[in-house]
Figure 1 (tube, rainbow, N blue to C red):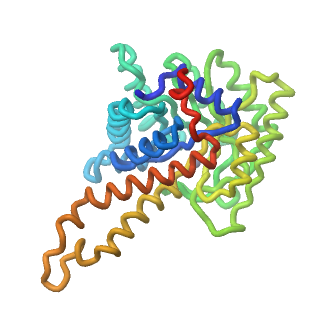
Figure 2: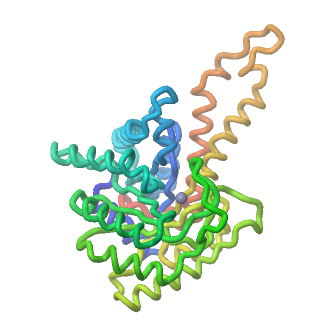
Figure 3: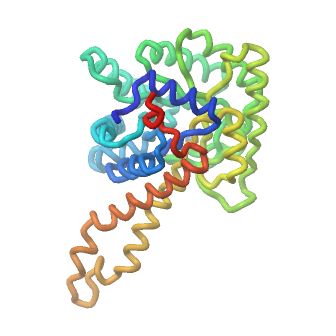
Length: 344
Ligand SMILES: [Zn+2]
């Protein structure tokens, strides 16, 4: 199916929250990784989300060009074209964009969507994240409200963050004193400000101890009950319609119980990057160690073209990534939930 349109994407998110499952949102940086995610989603019969970070987008444009807008457009166009061959829906999203990068990443991509809409074409991306978590909450929300007003006119969904995800992603490190746990008061303020934009849709990354990356057991203390406290507070104050659609950042390496609790409290999108990176690279490492004298020219020999043709190990990596996506879908209780299957 083609990339999910706005109505389909909204329906996907609503069905997930109601049915207590969530979509994996997987970061991609190349054709191979994007194809691997689509393959995994299709084999799981699950819809899902493909996302691009600022660094991933710059990489996708080529190391000589390093243009993150161009790279993001390139990946999105590839997904628009090939997604039509898979029996699932996928939404296209851009990951963390700090305030100082809005004018060089998200805004030009929204310009591009506006240009396409004016020409009668589908949106380029389905949703974008603005990460204002390094700012005081009122400044974070001032920017978010302005973005949401523009997004609402263009059938785009906004993802924002209140609280800070720990660890490091794309070279951006959270400060040691970062606020890793969002409070109900923070999320009430989010609802109070953002719900003034009528007809708009947004996703909230509320933090409950999340950390980007994978660490040894005991390092990360997740408290999903924080999400329940935030939902209870917002529903009490603003009614059921204000209940959040939540995003779980730093999903890699999480305990199944924490994942399930988070879903029960309204998480509909879980970002998984690190686990996917490892799955992809693990298959390549395996190929290289098994075919050492094929991928390398050892002792005056000529190696094996079959072994060092990048297609040989990238196909294995794509399959391994697809397998890991299937596992994520299962953990998120999304297997066989595609809207294609129910004929929606
Ligand atoms: Zn994140």
